[in-house]
Image (cartoon, rainbow, N blue to C red; front, side):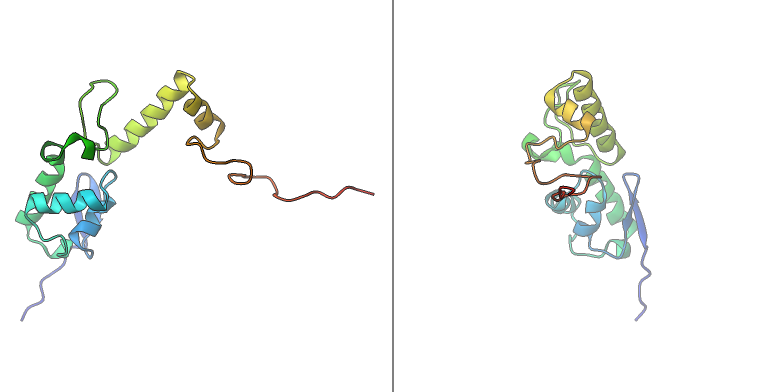
Length: 149
C-alpha cells in the first residue's frame, strides 16, 4: 500500500495553512476564522472536519476555498464578525489582511473623533473597562519604596 504524499502548506485566502493538522484546526490559521466558523466552513464544503488538510485532493481544497469565500452568504448576520460595516452598513465577514486593516482603521477613527476608547488606545491603556490599579503596569517597578534614613 502506497502512502499518499502530504502537502505541508495549503494556501487559502492568502494564508499558508499547516497541512499536517485537521481541517477545522488548520482553518483557524486564517485571521477571522475561529473554531466554530471553521467547523461550519468544513460542513459547507462537504469535507470531513477531522481529515488531514495536506492529504486532501485538490477538488476538496478548492471547495474549501469557495466555502471560505461564500461563508457570509450561508450564515445569519449575528454569526459574522462585522454585522454592520461603518461605511456601507452591510454585514460582512472579514478575513486575513482585510480584518487587520479594518481593526486598524477602526482604532484610527476612534482616535480621530477623540472618543474615550480612542484616547485609551492613544495612551496605551486598557480600553475595555479592566481594572488598572494593580495590573497593566509596564516599564516601572511594582512594589513599595523604602524611605531613606
